[in-house]
Length: 181
Ligand code: AMP
Image (cartoon, rainbow, N blue to C red; front, side, top):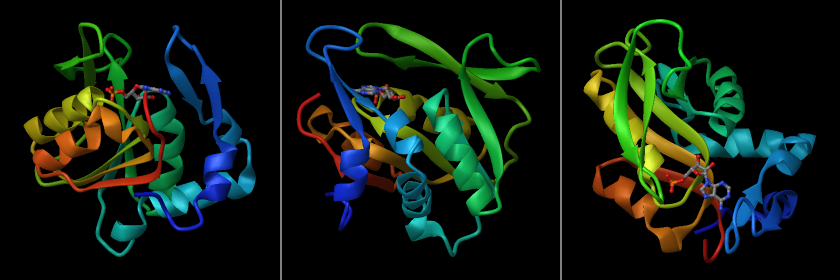
């Protein structure tokens, strides 16, 4: 389900056919980020249902989740935790394998990035199969965090990612849905 009056956000997203490979419609949010009104509205809306709750940390998934998550963290006065592809973080890390459309990869965060019992909201630009977000939820839970919600600008519901996260007991917030993948 899309946000009421989501038209301006939808029209702020650019779709690039056949990128990065034939058959994929890449949903490019750089046009949304470049539009001050759309960017602000997106940040406000992403965490709107949890705005009155205590949130300790926002966790953002590399790389577009850093841009959105950093802005959301500022908005809700929470700390920010980067979840990165393996080998990029300088200190000691915890790591988890996650499934991609073809094969698996690993993501990690610093071992002291969250504390036991921290209330964390996960942020990324888009949820497709949910493999990436599922990995991030498991990584956060392994470190004792409570994942309050996962928030995405874009949902591709036919790929089932949001349903997969909900089945893990994570409330999911998405602002705009696109058909197909
Ligand atoms: P998934 O793990 O299948 O849910 O894929 C989600 C991740 O892949 C997110 O970090 C997205 O930024 C990226 N992604 C997947 N599909 C698309 C798409 N059609 N357009 C833009 N980004 C995508």
